[in-house]
Length: 372
Image 1 (cartoon, rainbow, N blue to C red):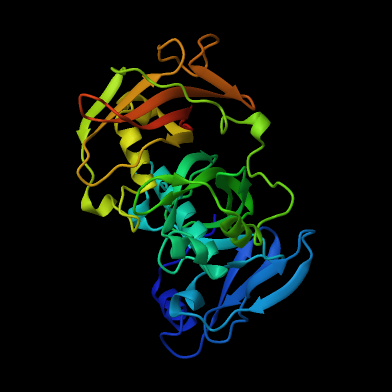
Image 2: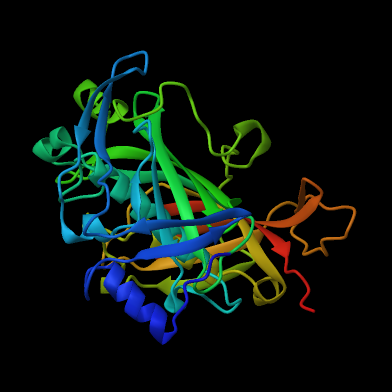
């Protein structure tokens, strides 16, 4: 993967490139066998198209040129694609985003997906004070909330690797919006992950779900592909597979987890990425030591507030027995493209007598590659 060098001369060049010293310089990177390519930030770069308005057939009717924008706009390594219907952005994996495997954690991946989705919305003029809210949504006090998230990671990036993420959204029936993602190693153009998510509208005051109105749908779909485009082929994936409710008690548990203040987002509830960490807290340590997460699917059923206390439950899916991945029997082992995965079911619930359900989940784990 492409590495971001940190030696002294590169720092000087990077500062110049970002406009902190002297004239902007080009950053040259090697990508596959193609000769070096460069890009300039921010002083004399060519600004990308801000928005494209399309008719029902998908033909481009009008292009709106981007203005100079904020400093963040000029330094951000992202822009709309040529047709204006998706958005790509590059990210450098930082040292505090890697975990015990010396690679980015799944929480890091989820945070990057959230970031690129919000930046996509901002690039078309939305979301100045919320997560991808349109003008009509802000007027009516509506916000987007996550209903389902499915992430697959085929290869985790390491510290200083450069990851390029492409995202786009499209309609999902009458009640929601779907957003998909493709993650690539920018140095090799190899696909290292995919994700898909479903979002519903909620009234920020009443905290009740609300159907997507025609006005909001028109504001959103004008920037969406006209034909369905799926990051993950649904017929060959767990992304739509129903998650059964895990009965209490689970085989493994971590009880009485409490949100930190830092877990709350601008929508005044626990951010959806925090749930991933809570789910993984109850995973058996022997799996954490010997496996790495291949995929995670979460169904969000209730929002979590600042003062809530949460129990995290986990059980092996199927017959309830941990098996070696080279085993031949047992429904807790799933096979995909010749690779075996150990699967688990998860439940997050309020730590009260009622035990109200917050989240259901499924994870699939693959054996860690042996180190030479």
